[in-house]
Image (spheres, one colour):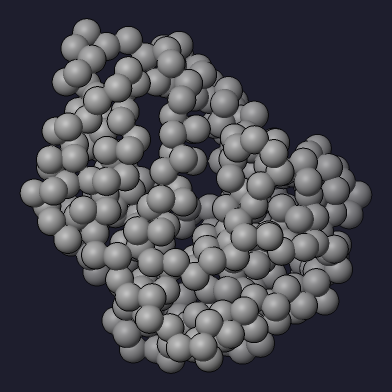
Length: 317
C-alpha cells in the first residue's frame, strides 16, 4: 500500500474523458491493502453453504421463485475495486459526455483523484454486495463477499465470525430474491439513473427521477430487511446495533465521506423501508408483501412509504 503510488497514478491520468478510470482504479488499489484471501477449504465451502441456505430460507419465507447469480465470488479489496470501476464508469458516462471543461487536463486529474478516493473508501468498507450491474449490456448480476472486510469488522465488533459472515450472506441473497422475482427492476432503476444523470449533465435537476429512484431503492432495502427478519435462523439485533454504534463512533472526516458517498442515505432507506414493509407484513404476511415485485406500478410512491395502508388499498394486496 503506497500513497505515493496512488498520487502518481492520479497525476498520470490521461485520455479524452473527464475521468481516467484505469488510473482511478490504480490509485484506489495503491492506497488500499488488498487483504488476505488465504481461506481454508472449509471457509470457502462455508460461504457456499451460507448462500445456499439463505436462498432456500428466502424462497420458503417469501414464496418467491428466484435463482442466484451465476457469479458469486469471495474477493479481496482489490478484486472489489476492479469489479466495480466499470459500474462507476457506466453511471458517470452521461456526465462525462456532456459536461464542459475549460481546463480538461486539470479537470481530468481532479476527477480521477475523486473517483479513486471513492473506490478506495468503499473497497475498505463493503462487506458483501448483490450487484445487478446497472447499465451493463445483457442481464448480468453478481454476488460478492469481501472476505478481508468481513474478517476485520467481525473482529472489531467482537462477534462470532461465522455468524457474522452468515448474516451478510442472508442479506445479499435477500436482494437477489428481489431482483430475481422482478426481472423488470434493473431496467426500472437504470431508466431513473439515466434520466437523473442526463438532466444533471444538461444543467438541470430531474427531481421526479431522483424521487422515484429513492422510493424504489427504499423498497429494495426495506424488503430485504423484512426477508432478513423472517429468514435468518437466529436473532441478529445485536449485530445491527454494533454496526450502527461503530458508524456513529467514527471521526468527522469519516462521517463527511459517508455523506458524500450516500451511505447515510442508504441507512435512511433501510429504516424507512423496513418500517413500511413491517406494517405491510403485519397486515398481509411476507408473501402478500411480495406483490410489490409483480410489476413496476406496484412499487410504493414516496408518499405511500409513509402511509403503507394507502399502498395496500391501491394494490389491493
